[in-house]
Length: 483
Image (cartoon, rainbow, N blue to C red):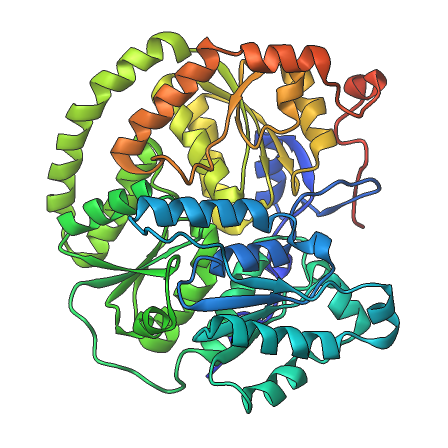
């Protein structure tokens, strides 16, 4: 059985991970194959592939985790754990628990002498404490630099404990694209969980839905509601999953992902190895996004007419509410910062509220997404700025300060201090997806525009760590195209 992915995402043909400029110019140069990746002589980031590998698996019900890293590498796990606990509450679980993970706390001594003993002890302690069915061991930049033989430690431990022990080789320095961490997680599932050469009998109407811990319960119900219209029932992977549910992947008749970036490689693998066809589309956010997502699955199962009838019914329900919201949002300029799939979905969503895209920050710009970015130009009637970056807050605030948007949608930690009305679209606690989520998001945007006082007051008392001179500089001055 072949492995899922042999290369990092930046090594895909015509994949750009660093760059920026006007959307039309980037598209033109990309199609001519003369758009080159750039190098940043100065950079700030907030994500790595290790974080995405952890987030993909953290909510698995019968799993426990060892992160072979310094303590700082699990800083983001706290908010993922918050999503996980809220998700349990929404699902009616009375005894809410934290995610089960141990950090080996690699220190200076381990860098010199190695951390394999610490790793072995952590896995044994974790197994004794939680008795899980599966243990995932995440590597880190530090463990990779040290050269710890994680696989050898795990192979030896596997003889001593019943739980499946799975290494996730997600050293952050391996890839500049955080989404590579998703591929790494699925690769490990293929290698250690799915039984080789097994081709079980299909379960009628079963569809794999690939989603991460950041998907809320309300969105889960909305996805199930949509798919039930098509006579399908769901196997969520690896979102609130288990070893049993992972092994059930091969019984599915179809696959679909919540985000085209999350599981595209894995779904292609399942199609080639196990003849499981899949629907590849954007996220079901907003009218256009939800229609396309739902119709794509409907075509896969041969029920397009059923879907069209249902879409018409839903439009009649939500459009009156959307038109009320548009009275406040119409014509407002928007800057967006999110992951690639969610960012494109957000840029499509704002069309419903009569808002105009002026800029977007996206981690990648590649062949699979060029039609989506070109489509945004048609939706919004012309050019907008694209910043191809893994966050890079210094570029983000420079662009926002120049473009003067009325609203910021996405991860607004830095931009909030400029006093601009904002909200985020990564909402694991309330609805986001489908027709129900559309109305909720609209009201959330409406409320943020109507009541921007918090951000305005924040801007008067909190300053960003950049000199005023930076805001008059070219935001892309630290980018240099590779020769």
